[in-house]
Structures are given as structure tokens and as C-alpha cells.
Image 1 (cartoon, rainbow, N blue to C red):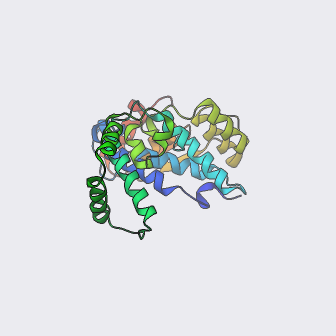
Image 2: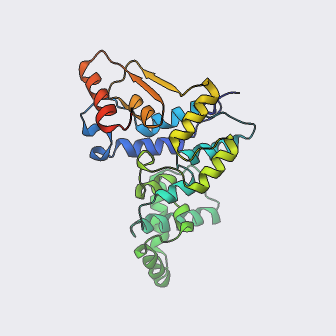
Image 3: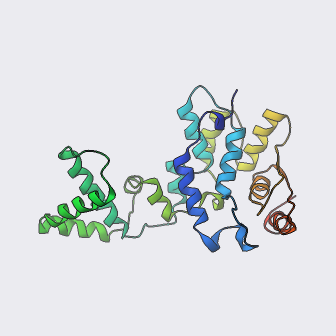
Length: 254
């Protein structure tokens, strides 16, 4: 049976999360110990390890849903990671986009408009709104998104601006673990439990991850944090020191 990563991989959401992590600067986990060029995002390492250990089934859609649940990148997981009310300023983008979309649909506009064309049309639409409609729109703009329905209508990249990053989140909720375990036939309640159970099923042992060019140590660090037996080496002594520091200063357990 092929692994999940051999059949599909949710690039769009993972790319958005990886970009957010790399742009986080000082709030990233590993760079606090020292700078390293080309350090891999932890969420990317996590996704690849899960993807290699998770088996695929004859239901690709369910496989994808479960994979995203494990990473808290499904819609429920993103909502759970939301840190609170979304700033009211997001309503400007949300409301204007909604108006423009409705305008395009009603008039049969061609798809593939450039952003400049969309901005120009949107500005034209807004300039022709009645005073009453503009007041309604301004009220929406001043509101914070308070319910799940409004949050889910935002694009994924817009939602995660207001969310804790997956690599810092405790993980799936108990109800999500029920769905994950039911699909995979596991009994996990944490990510490390799941990784070890899937590893023993595939290799009859706890998974081992090795990185012979460990650099800043992203792969050994995240693999160890996920419950794998982790190994790293590098010819550059600075890289070796960073990897050792990741595992022994920031890491937990053996």
C-alpha cells in the first residue's frame, strides 16, 4: 500500500503555512539559537514525515481530510488555532471582494482578470453604491469576525494571519482524534503517539529519521519532537553545534 505522500500532497495550504513560518522572523522556534541559511520550515518537515508514514486508502478525499486534521490545517483545525477576534480591518477586503465577486458573476465577466483590473472595477462599484449601502458596508468593516461562518468565507491565507502556527499548536482536538483514529485504525491521542504507532505498523519499530546534511537542524529537531528516533550530522561544525543545541536545549526528552 503506497504512503499518502506518494499519491497526493496539499501543496496550497502547506505553502501558505510554510511562508507564514519563514516570514515570522524572531518568533520562529530554531533561529533563536543562531542563524542558518536555507533552514527548512518545521511545518514542512512535519507534513513530510506524516505523509511518508500515513498509508493511503481507496478514498483519496478522506485521506486528504485526515492528513489535514493531523496537521490542524483542516477548517476545524484552523478555527481552533484562531487566536481571537479578527481585526475589523479585514472586513474591507472581505466586503469589497464579496461585492466585486457578485458584480462579476451577475454580469458574466470573463475569468482571469488581473488584480489591477479587479481593483479598478471594485473601485467603480464602490463609487456607485448608494449612501445607505455604503453605511451598511462601513458597519461591516468596523465589525470583528465573531462567528465561524464569516471566518470560513475568508481565503485560507487570510484566515491563518490570525492563527497560531501549526508547529506551535498542541494538536488536533479529541473529536478530531476520533476521526483520525477511525480512518487509520490507530489509538493515538497525540502526534507522537500516532507517529510511533504508524512507524511500528510499517517498520515494526519506532521510525528513525536521519539527516546527513542537517544544517540548521530543522529535520532532526522536528522528527525528534514528533516521536521519531532522530539522527543528524554535518561537516560544518557550526551546523553540528546548532543541531545539537536544537535537540538538547530546545528539544524535550531523549
